[in-house]
Amino acid sequence: MQRLVLFDLDRTLIDLDTAFLRWAEEFAEQWRLGSDAVGWLLSMDREGHPHREALFNKVRERFDLPETMEELWAVYRRRMPHLAQCYPGVLTELAELGAAGWRIGIVTNGMADNQLGKLQHTGLAEVIHGYAISGAEGIRKPEAGLFHVAAQRCGTDLAESGWMVGDNLIADIQGAGAAGLRSIWIDRGTWPDQDHEADHVVADVIEAIAILRST
Image 1 (cartoon, one colour):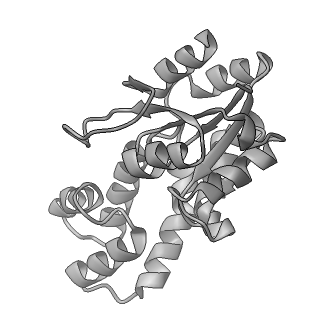
Image 2: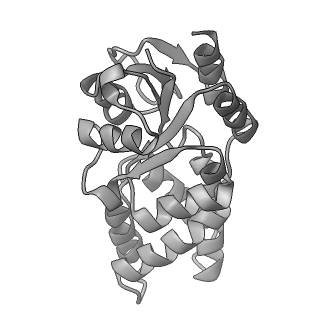
């Protein structure tokens, strides 16, 4: 098996939950929405509106805001890359993995401006070999095509297999299986009692990287 590993971005390499909290606090203060607004925004993020178009439709309706959904979403996408940070140790571990001969890619669903901004502002762009963003490619995980694009940009071919690391059982783990990749699932407790076909289950990405090093 070739030394290729593809990573999911949000909640795998990047602490999106903390970034979203910071954004929600700023947003509530900017619009003078009151103390309860932050909790409501967090609940919408966690409990059913992870797709931002749906989220900002709900936000606009809830707070009777004058901006359109598209305007609210665009401002969010411009701001989030500046709030996003990698989980502790990620940049160092990825750099060391690359120095050990691994080809490292990122395969992520999301709008191109938002996701590319995160790669650049967090420093991830400097320690990986390639990436594929659904909003730029017109393909979304779990479709195998997005994994193939990321692998090609890393100078590899999925015909020789490799690894996928992510936190979403459908987009990441099922997608990895469809693309012929072995997989490591980061279990954050959001998929209780779900059957899966991941080769390994870990608590965070640092533990996943340790498994890769041992292979």
